[in-house]
Image 1 (tube, rainbow, N blue to C red):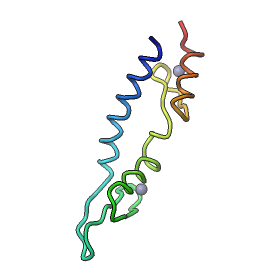
Image 2 (image 1 turned 90 degrees about the vertical axis):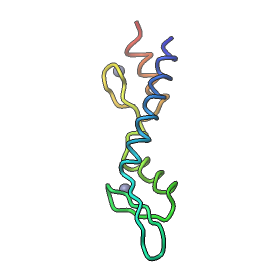
Image 3 (image 1 turned 120 degrees about the vertical axis):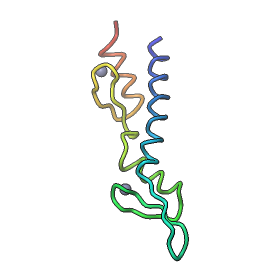
Image 4 (image 1 turned 90 degrees about the horizontal axis):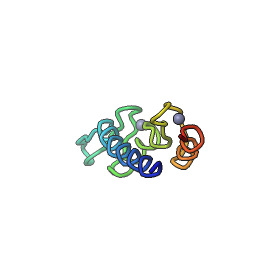
Amino acid sequence: MLFCYVNKYYVIFIKTSVGEIEAKMQKEMTETGILWRCLDCHYTTKFKPVLFQHVESKHTLSSGYNCQFCSKFCPSRNALRCHISRQHKQ
Ligand SMILES: [Zn+2]
Ligand SMILES: [Zn+2]
């Protein structure tokens, strides 16, 4: 029951973060071709997946998770699961 809820939360989190990541990505046309720019730090690359990874690792919360009950930050999904089972067990 508890695990289902955590998994559901995780899916929702991933869906929203994709939109968040794409909002920070800008496509530019230059003399040498297409360039992808990060709007947060002006990092540029020719490859969209590289920029996607850059934004995901540097400018989003996907390297950690907030507890949906008390908003405590946990560095991994496993840590969040442990936190919930310890702190929010009924
Ligand atoms: Zn950046
Ligand atoms: Zn909590």
